[in-house]
Length: 495
Image (tube, rainbow, N blue to C red; front, side, top):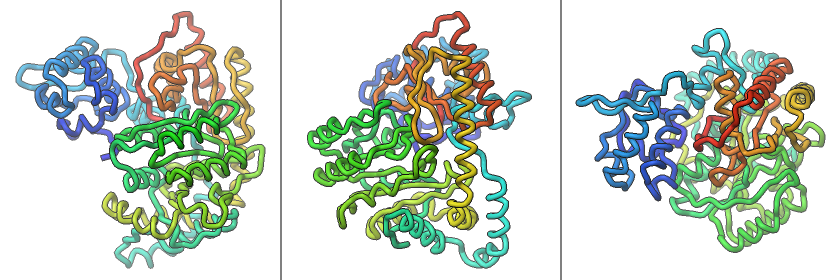
């Protein structure tokens, strides 16, 4: 069961162990009643426990989280007082929302996506991804349609991925400067699944891992769900603190390190070649697996796209590097096509983990991915040109509506990492949600709770007019005269 699994209303009841598995590790380590109430409220607001679901009995949840019954009773009392649960004698305790409070997590994603959203679906600034390139997708469908019947006559199980797709991904790595054989590629349902598979194979609860801070929020969720001890490398507007990174690696000897060196999410920073060499050497010296996320590597707006990270290693010096990527940012998040590049032995072991999880990826998605990967170098320039236009539009809107905010221009990526000048990001994101703007608050990207409260990640993946309206609503929420105060830590859904 993944950290981000939504417990739907149709389930009607959530078991004590199931609920305990969704709670953050820090709450399980010290289950005070206020912390437990805050965590349960977060699960409801974030949509990971649906509304009108019956919660476990107090005694059962107490046993599952290792707390006293009084602790759970106190937490339920707080939730009842604040309107997040209701109880009825003989019927148990059920999740609710306070009157007038709109959810901001997975339920809000439905509203932002227009499903059941009414006349105004809102402006979604939580998703740093573009819509599908219609012409390329139409061409891919036309290419795939006559080839699908032959595949449909087979059972359809390809645990490693379609052979042609593995070959196409390997060929692209080779063309970018990293010689790769098809047997070094495992096809996955996106980069998030790729990362979760790697963590599942290589790490056990309590292992140390090292990641950037800030970093991709959903990767942090995967690490927390795996009950790993997370250390961090600071990434500022000026880039990576490599001295701290090397020192932390030597002192903690983590099992795994996770990095986004190419237009880092959320900062947009690009790691210089000399720092890449240092990180390669340091992780090799400590025996640390290095997971390189290249999902955004092709979103190079002002510089040439960088070569694969592992290509900088001396011959035989990158066996500890595992590279993950997908088509979600270059093409479409709705096309679940990703990959892992590693040694052939590692790919075989990862495939065994994947088979236990979902058997195989969608054949249709893989078939569509083939022409998209083959034509990436032809289709990408137009996408990048549009992103440059939208980035400039976002900058103009920020300068017009929020001149007191600041950001550091970066050479690529899909968003700006904006400094609000004061630690009100969570409060602002909640106020903005009431105005129909869904936004990735800074704390969502921090390894340590409460960090980056002065930041917002604002993507430039929407049309210029929607970006301007979104910034206008954000500015109105920021300037409405009622002081913004720090909010309870509530991880909003982002991508």
